[in-house]
Each structure stands twice: as C-alpha cells, then as structure tokens.
Image 1 (cartoon, one colour):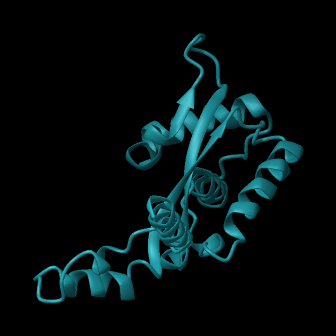
Image 2: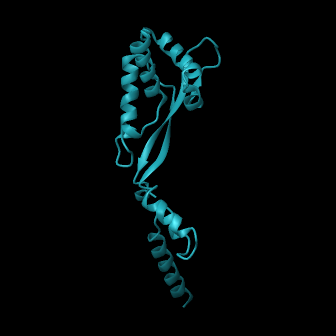
Image 3: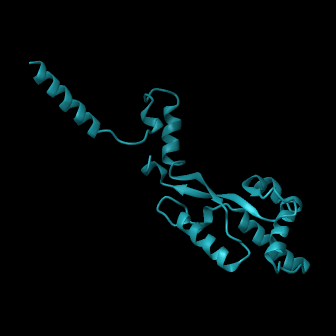
Length: 170
C-alpha cells in the first residue's frame, strides 16, 4: 500500500515538474482587484513589446580606426542588432556613431581634417569626450588604459541595443 501511494506521489510530482514554464509575468502574480494590476497590464501591452535596452560590453576591442578592425566590430554589432528580439540599428545607442557624426560635422563646418592615424583618432575621441558634450553620455561607457597616461588604448566599452517582444522570452 505504501509503495502504491509513493508511486502515485512520484507520478504526480513528475507530471507537475513537466508542466513548469520558465519566466514570471508580474501581471499574473497579483489579483485582478489589486491596484497595480492595471499598471502591469499596461506594461505588458506596451513596454515589454518595445523599450527595454540590453547593454553589450566589448572587451579588448579591435582598433576602430583600422578598416579591418571596424569591419570586424560592425559584423559583431550587426549580429546583436539583427535578431527577432532587437529593434535593429535604429535603436542602438553607441558612442562611436555620435563621435563619427561629430568629426564629419567638424570637417564640413570648420574645415578640420579627419584623423589620419589611429593615435590621432583616439586622441580626438578623448577630446570629444571632454569638450564636445560627449562626456556625460559616453564617458562612463568607456575604459581607457590607465597604465600609461599618454596611451590612447581603449580597453573596453559598452553600447545598448533596443529590445522588442521581450514578453515572448520571459
């Protein structure tokens, strides 16, 4: 008799384990009469569809001035941007795009030549962070080599990719 009860218990436990689904949706965790229920329903209908940001950290990035390094980085970036859960290139926030826009504007508006070497390019990035308003937005996203103050070696940086349809993976 004990063995039969144990087998029934084990069967029910295994069946229950097979029914578990990954993820928690907050709107399913509160009663409909609870005041936050309307908020969770609204978030589920809007925010989870589009609006979240994923941060991507790039450690030991390639030389972004070098065309081969830039191409390598752009391929990696496109792989993040081109998924069913991302909002493509338009929702990516990265300092590199803002900096490139700035140096092109400087060339056309102020006749300041484009950087000709990697060293000059990274020096202009540092200047841009300090003088052109990039500091507040991007400075904390970048880690420079601190061993040598004159070094323009970028050790790491991060960027954000816009997400969509997050509720499908929760």
